[in-house]
Amino acid sequence: MTAQALETRDLAIGYRRRTKGDIRLAHGLNLILQRGKLVGLLGSNGVGKSTLLRTLAGRQKPLDGRVLLAGQDLAALSPLALARRLSIVLTLAPQPGLMNGYALVALGRHPHSDWLGRLSAEDHATVAWAIDAVGADDLADLPLAELSDGQRQKLMIARALAQDADIMLLDEPTAYLDLPRRVETMQLLRQLAQSAERALLISTHDLDLALRNCDQLWLMSDAGIMTGAPEDLALDGRLGATFDAAAITFDKRIGSFVLDPKGGPRVRLIGEGEAVLWLRRALERSGFTVCSDAADIEVAHRANGAAATWDLRVNSHASAHSTIQSVLEALDSERI
Image 1 (cartoon, rainbow, N blue to C red):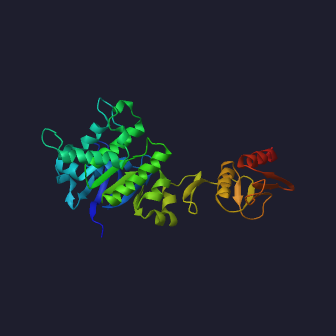
Image 2 (image 1 turned 90 degrees about the horizontal axis):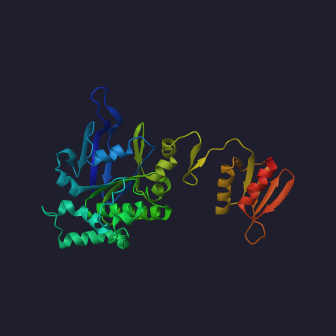
Image 3 (image 1 turned 45 degrees about the vertical axis):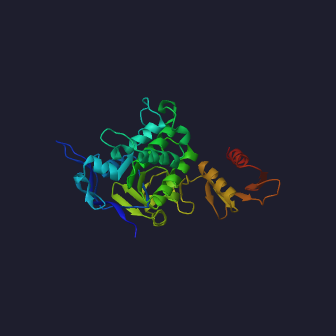
């Protein structure tokens, strides 16, 4: 049984106001965060994800209810005791100052150092391990002012890791990263949760990466928070409902959001495989309604080895095309 690291009991989050009444973003939250698990916190902008993270981290008081760390009330912990149990990485990139990468990561050892802030050999070993764990060895000696936002964010994750807390809360940890680094960072966080037995909660808008890497999702909406395995939430419709919008819908077959059909010309798409999937995306983006039954427009994927990849038929007119771009141009000319 995986040990429970964090629990909320009837938690209400939001902002207190003296005259107009409190702003309650969510209430009645009974959540559990377990060691060894990577949990993704998803929801629309403004729904309260960052407020929840700040409340769980003790940086903002709850409107009601309690947050328990290993069964102990967070409100009863001293700042030092809290820092030894929980670390947090916020979206805001650190200000460069005059320190280098190593010095930034070393700040994570502050809760464990003596009253003069001196680092022991063990502290330095932990800092070196954290830097290596996130693949930032080449950044350790460089001034922060010379680093990109993405490189600084990587060091901030290393700082939280060096803090050696059982719980790590991360608010949009991939916000400043390009796609390869986002994938790399999510895989790293998953690996850390499992190998170091940490409890990780990350707020993210990277739905695809969350579906592929998180052990559990917390879906936050105006109605509260729904929890479960990513696959269960996708199959039962709760994931799609959380991000319900007029122009998009969640496609369970591919695990991603797609543009809703706009009622454009119907196209029968024949074939299977990744090439057909990409043509479907291109057609839907261009306003066509893709179907599998009879239609005036038909596109068939020809087997590899032939000179052309796509056979297009519009009414009685047939043509062959080697690229998706060529198919779209032919369809545009037919619509004029």
